[in-house]
Amino acid sequence: MNDSSLDLSRRKFLKGATAASVTGLLAPGDVAKAADPENQATASQGATASQAAAGGKFIGIQVGAVSFVDEGVDKVLDLFQEKARVNALMLAVFTYGRGIAGRQLPGQPLPDHGAQEYDSNTFHGGCYAAVHTQYYPDTIFKDFRAPDLGDFDLLGAVVPKAKSRRMRSYCWFEDVYNPRLLANFEKVAEVDVYGRRTGQACLNHPELRRFLAALVEDWVKSYDVDGIMWGSERQGPLNNAIGSHHGRFTGRGRITCFCEHCIEKGRERGVSVERAREGFIELDQFVRAAWAGERPSDGTFVTFWRILLNHPEIVAWEKLWTDSQQEIYGLIYGTAKGINNRVQVGWHIWHNNSFSPFYRAEQDYWKLRQTSDFLKVVSYNNCGGPRLAEYIRNIHSTVFRDASPEECLALHYRILGYEEKSSLEQLPTAGLSADYVARETKRALAGVRDSEMRLANLAAAGESLKELTIT
Image (cartoon, rainbow, N blue to C red; front, side, top):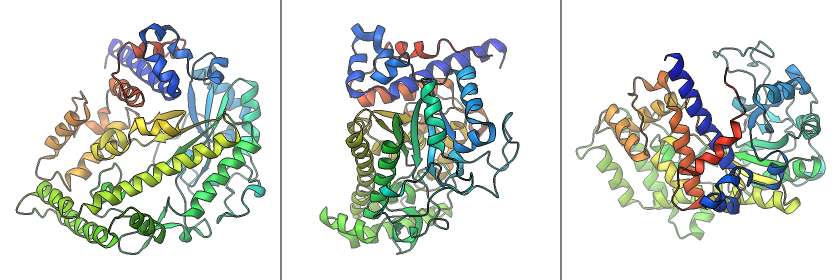
């Protein structure tokens, strides 16, 4: 790209990214006001009272405890404010995933600041804030304090200093656990269709729900935090079975959950558990054969659809799983608001929402807004390219095998409303366009408002990063 086209691309990206940050924090009533042309001039200032106090702009960044330990709290906050005028911190408080709490992943280039090392041998995960035991007397997990950074208390060390700089602090926690490091995890683990326990937690297990509520109570009562954000990059058994995701897929998806709590819930809904089991086992066998290159006489998609027709319990079980995940949203929202109604609560929405029409159908923004103050919708355009390419290869290997991979990609471009031009071969290096961010933002705005989106509504969002200079 020449210099002029690069500058144009950067401006388009900033416009789209800014819209995403501001849109995410519009409260339901403020979203409706922003849709009114008479309110365009003040739309970027209408999110919440706390935002207004900070100038009406929301410029957030995700950050783990290790950054503050490596470089010092003040130095990191200085860098955020001076380089990007950040005024909101998404602090990775609880996770067993290295993606948000560790240093750079092995094999990736090291950053140009901080510790020049990987943490493959030192990363543990868990809670990076102090654990106040009075909030966990009846929870199944007792020893979940992250040991890899000593007694460093992420919230205790960062929140007060951020507050003095008029920076807001959000507790970001993730639906990722490590069964080897978390005693009693097997008791809350999902059970697959074959009766095997997995490394994922069952969202219907009362012990897990009690633990999640205790975490939120601890953070909101123990620290002067501004919000809570939970990230659950998971989906139900149907989507997993057919490989409808980006990430490694070998023709064998995790088909869960059939634990006692999910079985009871299914029966309460009038779903035949045995018919659901039979259907998923048949679907699993079909997917393994398709992935291995075996083509049924009627084709892969027709056979896939026939399995769903013969076993509607498959879709019912998928709905049960998704509803259970959204019940957790309600639990977290209600717990935080019950303690302090001013605390903002929202969700990290998995990038798969951009690629899979199956998963997208289950992520109803209008429904999500009922228990949300904000949505942080993942729409990274650079890594979106390789992720979309991986998703296409996965889903093509199962239900879309009748078409070529390129035809499968073209169909998804059309279904998802994308205007991308990159071929499947080009996607991993080309990424998605900067306009992709704006289009996903527009779709999110329309979804939470449940009405027609006007392009003019994005103009107000553009004001929030005008002061940033790209060098």
